[in-house]
Amino acid sequence: MTFTKNRRYKEKMKKISVIGLGFVGLTLAVTNAQKGFFTIGVDNKKEKINNLNKGKEDFFEQDLTKYLKNSLKSKKIQFTSDTKKAIIKTDITFVTVGTPSLKSGKSDLSYIKKSLMEINDILNNKNKTHLIAIKSTLTPQTTQKIILPIFKNLIIKNKLHLVVNPEFLREGYAIKDILEPHLIVIGEQDKKSGDILKKYYSEFYKNPPEIIRTDFTTAELIKYTNNAFLATKISFINSIANLCQKIPEVDVNKISYAIGKDKRIGSLFLQAGPGFGGSCLPKDLSGLINFSNQVGSSDLFFKAIKEVNNSQLKLIIGLMKKLNVLNKQKTISILGLAFKKNTDDIREAVSEKLVKKLLSLGLKINVHDPMAIDNFREIFGSKITYYDKIMDCLKNSDCCIILTEWDDYKKLKQSDFIKIMKTKNVIDARRILDPTKFEKINFVALGLGKK
Ligand code: NAD
Image (cartoon, rainbow, N blue to C red; front, top):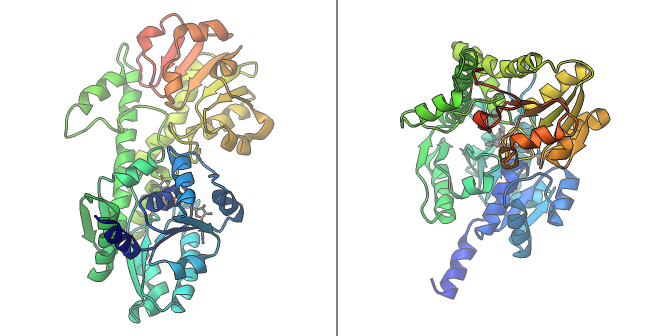
């Protein structure tokens, strides 16, 4: 492309705004800017905006710092709390505000409703037609029954195009997943709306992935089903792990490796462990149970996935009992607080539930995590002790529990535990260590039958 053609092309590129700069929104905003789209990121937390304008993000995600700094340097990105400015200056808005679980398991739609009502007021005074793409995860029928009525007048006047565009990224790999998605789903009511988003994706990707175009509710249910299936795989292998633990010499890792070789099954999400956490699987599974009840369909299967997941904590406590470390004089070292590696996210992480339980029993707790310490400190303050170094966390301890699969923990050797711990008890709740290399200490693991 010649210089002038290239400039003309860039000038024609749509201008993007992203509302809600959490894990999804911020990574999406900086990736758009890096791809050359003029992008405005909006969040209602003013302090967050001030920090982002200085190049400081408030959570850890691989490559995020680099992308944020480059975007600011190229002036392709602006951050603001002024939704009006963002909507007026751009053509397409991605909505990425949170849809957390309420106690009932239902999704809390208050953030998205508030945001969309604000956008509706602004668009009523904008002359150009605008596209709203909702990336927040929604309970099926939310767009049809709750969101469409908000925008009714704008749609009648042909001033708004609306699509549901669920996001499938994984925390820890968010930027990579935005750059190389396995699929794009567009839920639309009219073809024109879907066409605009499809055109944007053809500018974003040199070779766009497969795009599925469907109605709003199917798009919403695809996202719920996707997450429920991932949760199913985890609870399934954890049920097999619990069985393995009762049978001498049997190790679930060998079983998951073997069945993962079957292409119909696949090896991903088949690692036994403390159960799934994070901001998506537990919440979307609860949402699916609630939605099934609402439409009069059986929730039996989905409830079982959840129950298996909740019981993983009891299994860890059971292993502690076996090792005789559940009394007040004991010090427990927990390695790994984040709900999985490569993130500092501790939402719905088993670490929080375990620490609460152990504190209620009066045990002394040491914790280590390469990324999530600050988030954990906000919950537990001075009730537990935080360590930057693994070996300091293990010093004089009575039991080590590995809860997150960080690469540094995979490098631990038997001699490390022998050297530093008071009593050499290790629980591998993530199944990242080879049990045959830990035969001189009290090594137990989820899904490992005792000798
Ligand atoms: P998050 O809670 O990390 O971030 C949401 C952000 O929205 C916050 O910074 C909040 O301040 C902001 N916000 C709320 N109301 C606002 C408003 N009216 N105007 C401007 N900003 C507002 O959420 P997240 O983890 O990024 O998830 C966002 C959505 O994407 C959820 O529906 C989630 O289910 C879905 N999702 C998340 C992931 C993930 O891995 N985190 C993956 C796929 C889909």
